[in-house]
Image 1: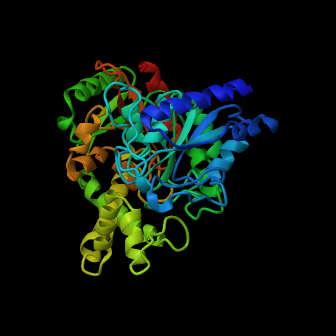
Image 2: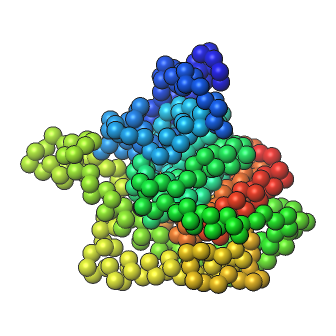
Image 3: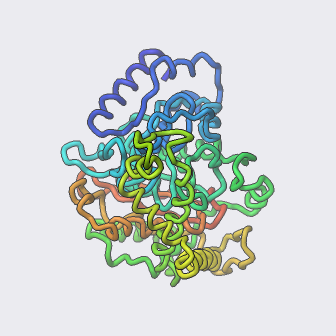
Amino acid sequence: MSSTRSVSEILSRAASANAKFNIFTSLRSQSQIEQSFKIPKDGPLHGKTVAIKDNIVTTQEPTTCSSKILSDYNSPFDATVVTLLESAGAMTLGKTNMDEFGMGSGTTHSHYGATLNPLFPDTPTITGGSSGGSAAAVAADLCDIALGTDTGGSVRLPAAYTGVLGFKPTYGRLSRWGVVAYAQSLDTVGILSKDIELIRQTYNVLNKFDSNDPTSMSNQLRSKINEVSQQKQKLRIGIVNEFNLDNLSTEVQKIWKQVVDQLLEHHDIVPVSMPTLKYALPAYYTIAPAEAASNLARYDGIRYGYRSDDDKHHYAQTRSTGFGGEVQNRILLGNYNLNSDSYKNHFLKAQNLRNAIKSQFDHVFKFPNFLSNNKPAQDGVDLIISPVAMSNAPSLHVFQNQTPTESYTNDAFTVPASLAGLPAISVPWASEIKSSPIGIQIMGQYGDDEQVLSFAQSLNKLNTV
């Protein structure tokens, strides 16, 4: 993109796709994007187009989190990740649709309506969530890169359903300054693209310490990890016994076996036992709603965003009409988990389970976790692989008729890495069902992002979607 015409063309394509698939919540004007060309740049992402999930703040368009309660909210500053991208030469096209405040796995819980999967133009099909707009923008070739956020799989699941790459770095690697909080101990900025090398370049641009973010990994720890990090040609790869692979759909089971058979030709694959992983989903759906209930208490209609006209019951009416049903459900669940009767029996037990899951990962991986006193296993694994989801992308009708329990189990394979703060990526793998790829997940030890990206690159070469 180096001309006025190309800017015009890409905006025209974006507007056309948006009308059909509901991908963007806002698009920048041609003049706003052309402004990028007036500043000489030689950055590593010069000329690359990027879409930003609508819970990452920007100054040039509203940040709504796809919620009525934040309608028309304009941030006075750009998120650190946005500043870094644009300083590296990337051009922001606009903001993408999402599940409201990141709560959902289909991008169907949005004030603006559901985002549809561009791989299925004739059958309304979900993109996965909550970063479905970002995944759809990449899948439809509307941008080179998209930013999402991953709390329990919200980058990896949409990537799997739309046939693109979706990378969740180690928690703390990328700045959260300017990311609207859903669950602050889990929220991680992620990167989506069709090009693994472009994901690596984007990661290198964003992988910086940020003093504004109290959860940002220190430069000292980054250096310590870099000193021992090394990429290997032959890897020891683990498959977790406790992942219920028998419940995979027939198509995913078939693809999964193909992937494992191909990897066996080049690597050692071993079973690993992690008994606490069967409690990962209950722990996640206790911790995340509790943090959400606390974070979303600030939306009262007084300081910013939507405000109810009912002066007598202002606070209650603002929140009951400003938040969608899924967000209200999770706030209620979170408040229940934090009340005096449930705190000890639910929330603290979930935190203990989370620590146990982290500890088991430490005892399975060969690479050390520098935040832990646990010793790495001498005969441990370099990486862990699994499917990203139980099935291919379901139709919108099927997904909307799932029970809450069925919907929540979509995250069964992705939540463990989120609870432990580990790097993980979804790599697309072609399916025999037309236009319906699946995602293969690669997980690494805390801080071992380079090994995850290197293996993703080699896995990506084995199959082309």
